Amino acid sequence: MEYTQFLQNVSDIVVLDPRYRVPFMRDPNDIDVLQTAERGEADILCTQDGDFYDEAVLSFCATRGIEVCTEKTLMGRLVERYI
Image 1: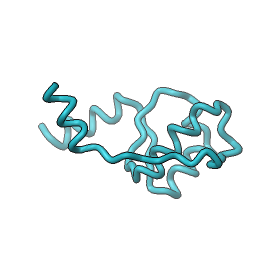
Image 2: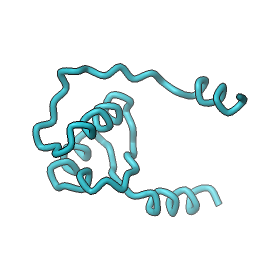
Image 3: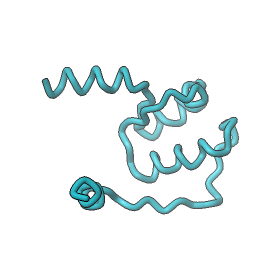
Image 4: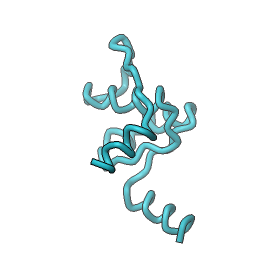
């Protein structure tokens, strides 16, 4: 219960636009993930989904200040920064 409350306190609601289109995304379900990252002003999108490593997607994300990386890369950065 405390953890849920914590997440509610630190989270921002991101309202998705059903008209948002990314023509080069192969999986339509990934469009919501990408839109959430963009509208939520994410710095990093951590995923193992290979579709996000397509050059067009990486370029799209980079122009919006979003880095795509694996959890291994993210964990390595967190360890370097905080330990």
